[in-house]
Image 1: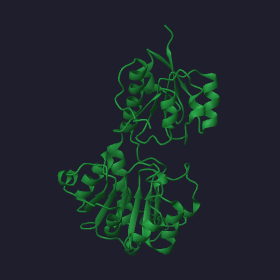
Image 2: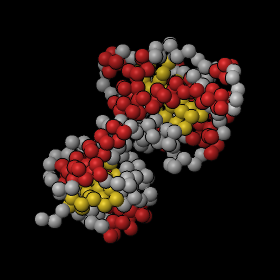
Image 3: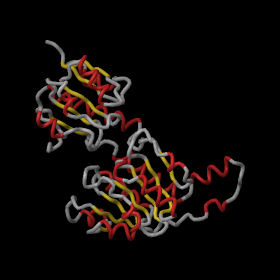
Image 4: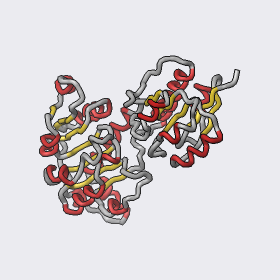
Length: 322
C-alpha cells in the first residue's frame, strides 16, 4: 500500500522526531520554504496528503492550498494559526489543527525573564561591567516589584501560567480578557478588569498573552501607550502584530514608557533597527517557545495530530473554520 505524503512547509531542517511518529504510514518532505511562492513550487513537485506549518511563512492562502488537492489536514505547529487562510481551508475541505498546549511553561518563564531583566536593569549592568565599569548606580531607576501591578492582556493557558509565576514575586496581578469565564480571577487569586483602559491605567508592567486577529492587531497603539502610567514597561511574547512598533518607538523616545521586552515582531526576521537604538529594550528572536523538552513536545504533538488525520481518526485540536 502506498504511503501518505506529508510536507513540513518550513522551519525544520530534519525530521527525526516526526519520523518516529509517522514513518510506518507516511513519507516526509521538508520544503524549508520561507515564503509562499517557494512552498508553491515545492507543492507542484510533491503530493501532500497533510502539511505541518510553522511560522516562517506568514500566509498560506487559497492558491497554495489549491496545489494540494488531496490534502486532508494542515497542522499548525504552534498555538496561533493566523498564517492560515481558514476560509480557503474550509472551502477545500482541509481540517486545520494547532498545538495549543505546548510551550506554556517556556513562554510564561520567558515573559517573567523579560520583566525581570527590564526591572532589574540586567542588560545595562552587564554592558557596564563588560566596559570595565564597576558602579552600582547603573541600577538607578529599578523599581521594587512587590506591590507593583502587572497587567495581563489575555489570560488563557500562558497568561494563567504567567500570573501564577508573577504572584510569587509579590506582583499585584490584574488581567483583561473578555473571553474567559467569570470566576477565573477568584480561582487564581488575581484581579479582573472589565475594560482594557482600566487595566492600562493602573499597570506598571503590561504583558501580552492574547491571539492576533483583526480585533487585536495594533491593540497597543499610540492611544494605548498614552493611557499607561509613566515608567510602565511592555512585554510581548504573544504576536508581533499586536503592537504598533512605530508607536512603541515613539513612546520609548518620548520617555512615556520605561522599556520594552520583545520576543515577537510585526515582521520576522526582525527589521526595525530604530528599536535597537534604545538601551531599555530587550529583544529575543521569537525564542520564548523553546526548550529542548518543549520543542520535542511540540513536534511530537503536531506529528501525532497528522497521524490521526491521515488514519481518519478525530483530531484532538481542530480549529473552528470561519
